[in-house]
Amino acid sequence: MTLKGLNPRQVVRKYGIILVLLLMIILLSIVQPAFLSATNIFNVLTQSSIFGIMALGMTFVIISKGIDLSVGSVLAFAGVVAASLGQVTTATEKYFPNMPVMPVIVPVVTALAIGAFCGFINGFLIAKTKIPAFIATLGMLTIARGFALIYTSGRPVSNLIPSLTALGGKIFNVIPVPVIIYFIMIIVSAILLNKTRFGKNTYAIGGNIVAAEVSGVKVSRNIIMIYSYCGLLAGLAALVFAGRVGSVHPGAADGYELTAIASTTIGGTSHSGGIGTIGGAFVGALVLAVLRNGFTLLGVNAYWQKVAEGLIIVGAVIVDMRKNAKRD
Image (tube, rainbow, N blue to C red):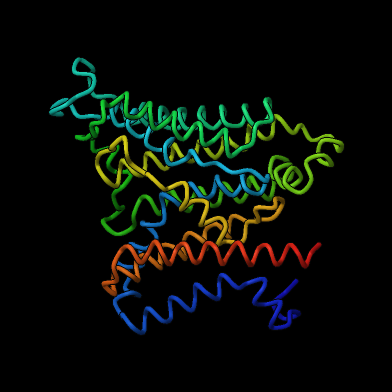
């Protein structure tokens, strides 16, 4: 349906979150002209890259009528292990003192593998034991965080090799690498969701799991794949986090799972299942990043950011519930 064929109410319903984002940008650019500077725009995109990457995986999960509360802890666990394999030889607290400097591919593959494995365990438990996704991923949240603390004895892992910190740097000292990685994963995720059988099955499972199974969808296998992909992206987010910060603490990314869920929800992905887009997740993450950046530029107390985010999330869910009620 084109914009031309929509009445005002349909425009608001279909493109409401984009209109909200544009309104926020216009108001902030008027109140604080520095908001629209190229440097600040890149800052907004960079700030949204970590939880935005996680939101892409969360979109698949929520479309399938699931939830993943573990991605923040998985990020921390994957991050500390990867960082320990990517330390310079002169690191003051080197985790493997006798190990030579490893090529960057080693910590990269390790982080992705840990993330995907944690996601696989989540999916396997949900698909095979039929326990609620909330419980399975809540358990993984605690387990992954516990392993991160055990592995590091509660200490941060720092002194990373330049090729690893480059993942948080800039190309030509202008374009942030996290933004490039984020945009690549937006394209990859959009293709997976819209152009593959895996994506169609994700929508089918969320829309009606019984009908999907009757129509020949291998539900268990696809659920495992959905959560594995979400975990994989948490592992990728861990690498971006390590690159940006230059170290990883076992307590890192606390609450990031809620931000990822919020981004997806604000972007229009329905917790009733079967509805959602990658573009919506991107816009939702951008709304939160613009809100945080705007509050910082205006000198608003950081605690009020939490209040504003909470109100936006509740509002997004109310709108989603009303749309589903009308659909029914």
